[in-house]
Amino acid sequence: MFLYDKVIVIDIEATCWAKGEVPENSKREIIEIGICKLNMSDGSIEDKRSYLIKPLYSEISEYCTNLTGITAEKLEKEGVTFQQACSNIKNRYNSLHRTYAGYGGFDKSIMESQCSELGVKFPFSETYLDLKVMLSLMSGEKPIGLLKELEARNISFEGSAHSGADDAFNTAKLLYHVLKK
Image 1: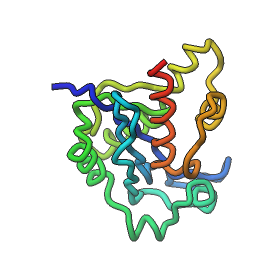
Image 2: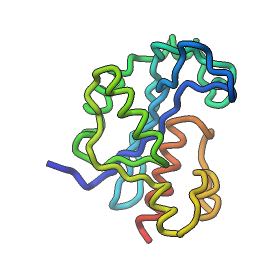
Image 3: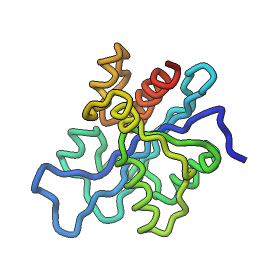
């Protein structure tokens, strides 16, 4: 049974490097899954959290730490395996039975790719709302970033940019604003 009461909103942070500085034998890996539930009846946002993921093939660069605030030490201390995070998400958010959303296609594609590479069951339904594409189609204009979209609608950004949980929360606020019109 598919549930329509809430939309799961995600934001993924992955290993990254300054332009042209990707170390040999390294690749982009998910290091944080930010997630929350948007209640479609009233716009309230609940169960905002961050799943920190220990990377298997990459080190956390100084560039990545400066961007996301995530350090190798933090991942070692608080991180879980990708498989554990996906299992926790399925159980906690009933995510196989709800629409999920994100700002752009990166979040969906890297989740699908990493699940496929690691043989992990995809933790979300087949129904994905790409808010960035939806807004571009509605406006007929080139897509812009999350911060600029919020600013254009006089919606304040809460938290820190490039924090998965904060970006998911702000994406949920924007999604509700757009859908309630």
